Image (cartoon, rainbow, N blue to C red; front, side, top):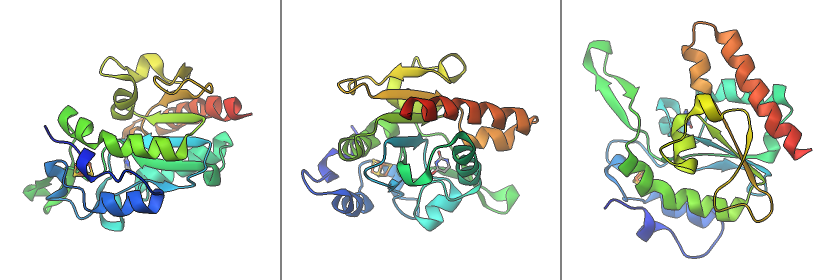
Length: 209
Ligand code: URA
Ligand code: SF4
């Protein structure tokens, strides 16, 4: 089975993880992508934000949520009252998966990661969770939700409420799911969809006190 496991160092901090992840060959996604996009932000953050996988901009720049979806996320966090400095941002899958679309000038179109790829990449997320040990993890969209809660997760049913975080309940750590910020960009009624994202994030902000 595909797995990142043999690439994850047994000790060391975030820099050791980041360096090792740069050389991960745990699944085939590393072959076509530019680079590994590891998590970024405050390793002592109380809030961890989990996306799906890097997009085109993230793949080029090597950092998560630096493209259009990232702009939406940054604005929504600010409006919800979550300090950017109190967050660590990462993705369920660390390499960009895409399809080249010749009729659109060879544009690289995002493809959803498979369960196999998500499972392969999971050891990196586990290592990040051990290091950051957040009080709240925010799942951005269906893929992140499934990565944390299993395949029965449904954004529409479970968004906007504080849920126990499976396997991480000892200190009352919780999980909050919401839509993916890119859903705002795709929506016809952007304002309403964006307002929903902010109101979900406010639940997380309130839980932090
Ligand atoms: N979408 C994601 O899920 N993650 C990113 O880093 C960028 C876009
Ligand atoms: Fe490794 Fe994850 Fe990249 Fe696959 S997607 S090669 S498991 S870092």
